[in-house]
Amino acid sequence: MVFDPQIVTWYGFQHSVYVRFSLLALSSIFFLVDPFATLPTFLAITEGYDAARRKRTARKGALTALIVLSTFAFAGEEIFRLFGITLPAFELAGGIVLLLIGLDMLQAKRSATQETPSDTEAAAQKEDAGIVPLGVPMLAGPGAITSVMILVGQANTHWQMAAILISILITALICYLVLGHSTIVARVLGDTGIRILVRVMGLLLVALAAQYFVNGLADLGVIAHPVQ
View (tube, helix red, strand yellow):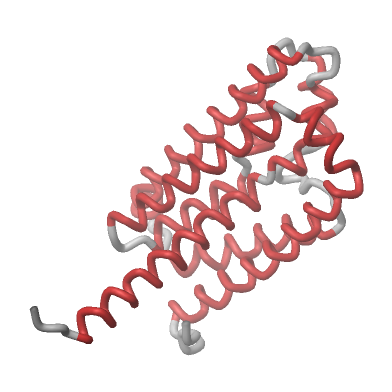
């Protein structure tokens, strides 16, 4: 058997690209869905619920987010084509949306694009708020949908598409676990812990928004592509 260093180098490069894209997909989707920031509102909505009913509501919310984000993942290219939107334009627009959400998260508060006081009040009066507004827009909001569509636009292979779908699935599962056990999670983290988590995610989200800006400008040819 002949050892070919070029094959090893190619395999290592492909593996590195796969890991980097997978981490980007998971982090960007999870930070935007952010079930931890939803905890206080979820507890207010489900006040008076028993444990079983709270878990059912969390399951409906997570399943709704999974279906909505997966739908946009599959329909992303068609939406781009239908409206004549280029990926660089969407990266720049998405960067603005993510920046606004990230700046709100740095202040440990939910962005108005994800949740408004009227949404919370309406949800508290509904018999079942698992689909609306918990699933949409609190979990699968404009920011998460935008991020999924940008990732789909950047995906060139089947494994990249698979990484996006797996990231959506993992995020939905974490949402169910966090919200389904919301009283335990809130007790363990406390208000301070939740605020710290939200701020850290907000900082990373602002950095991600900046990266989308850089990618958009580079794809337009305004600046050189950054060295990976």
